[in-house]
Length: 98
Image 1 (tube, rainbow, N blue to C red):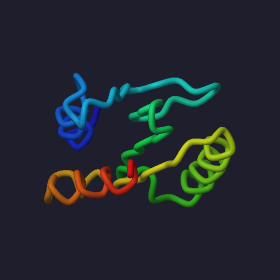
Image 2 (cartoon, rainbow, N blue to C red):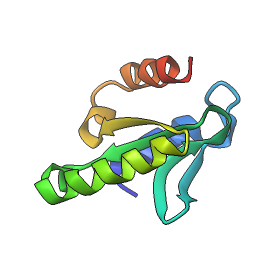
Image 3 (cartoon, rainbow, N blue to C red):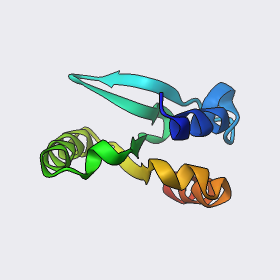
Image 4 (cartoon, one colour):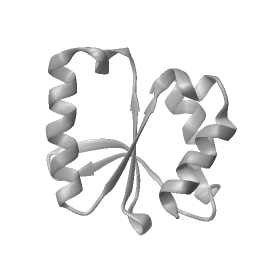
């Protein structure tokens, strides 16, 4: 787990975030997503530097389209954003939930 994922997991685990249950490294069919709230059909993906190369972006796009067809909303967050201002990330997640 990256440093950014650890920070986010502290916020999401044990129903700390508005009483919602988030799962970490949650399998959905052939994919494993970083964080998932089934109640809200929300997936949160943390993108580190590896996601900057063209092949990985294409794979992410294919994966995202598949998960969206299954009814999930995908919120992508850059790993380095989690170390800047967690309050901004909290607001973004709340906007996606509502």
